[in-house]
Amino acid sequence: MVDVAIFVPEPAVGMSAALIADLCWVAAVDAGRDPAEAIQVVSLDGGPVTTHTGLSISVNSSIADIDSASLLFLSAFWGSSGDALTRNHDVLLWIENLATRGARIAACSTGSFLLAATGLLDGRVATTYAPYAHTFRRRFPAVEFHGDRSITDAGGLMCADAIPSSLDLIIASLGDLYGTDIAEKLATDFLMGIRRSYTIANLAFDGQKFHGDRQVLAVQRWFERHIDEPIRMHQVARQFGLSPRTLTRRFTAATGEPPSRYLQRLRVEHAKEHLAEPGTTVGEASRAVGYTDVTAFSATFRRLVGVPPSRYQPRQ
Image 1: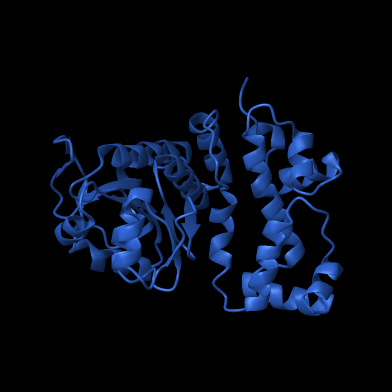
Image 2 (image 1 turned 30 degrees about the vertical axis):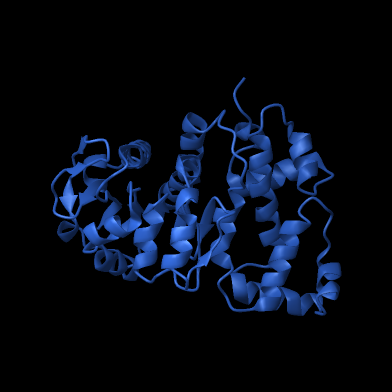
C-alpha cells in the first residue's frame, strides 16, 4: 500500500496536479518517509498526461499498478466535464475499489466530477469549481450539492472548490495521514498570509454528520450558529427537549464523542480561521468563539492542537 496516490486526469490542469504532488512530497519528507515510494502520481496507463496548455506531466504509475492507498487525490481536469468523464471513464472502478479498501479520497476542483461519477457521493455532500456548479447539479442529482461551501467532507469523501480551498484540503488530509505536527508545519510554510473567506471547520466536522439522528444534527448546526456565545449543555438539552444525560448519550452514539468535546473542537477550528487574519489577537479570536477566559481558551487550544494559538497567527 502506498501512502498517497495522485490521479491526474486528461486533459489535466497542471497547476492542480503539481500543487498536490509538491505538498505531498514535502509532507512525506517531513514525516520521515521516502517520497519516491510513498507518493505515487498516477495516470490511466502510466504514460505522461497532457495538460490543457499542451505541457506534459510525467507520472510514476498506472492505475493498474496501485491496488491500495491510504489517501487518494483527484486533481482537476480542464474543459468539458462530459468529455473528461468519457476520457477518464476507466478510472471510476479503480476509485471505488480504493475507497472500499479504506482510502480517504480528496477531490480538488473539477476532480469532484470523477468522485461523483462513481456514485460514492450519492446522498452525501459535495462541492466543485463554481463555473461547473450548474453542470454538476444536473449531472449528479442524487448528490447533496453545496455550492456555497468551499470544502466538504462526506465521511472521508472530500471536495474542494478551487485552488485556495484545495490548499487547505490537501494539508488537512496530509495531517490526518501523517499527524497534526506535519499539517501545522505545512500550514506555516505554505498558507500564512493567504486570506481565505471560508471556514476550514467544515472539513473537520462534515464527516461526523452522516449518522441519521436528525435531532443530533440539529444540535450540531445550532452549535455552529451560536459559536460566539456562552453555551451550557443543560440549557441546550432543555431547548431540544432532552435531558442532559440523553443528549450526551445520543450525541456520543451519533458522532463518536460527547457534545462538550465536540463543541471545544468546533470552537478551536473556527478560532484558527480568526487567528489567520492579520492583526487578530489571541484574545479577539478567543471571544469570537465564545470564550471569555483567554487563559482557558489557550489551554484548550494547546491541548487539542498541540501548539499555542499564537502559532496560527501570520508572521510579521
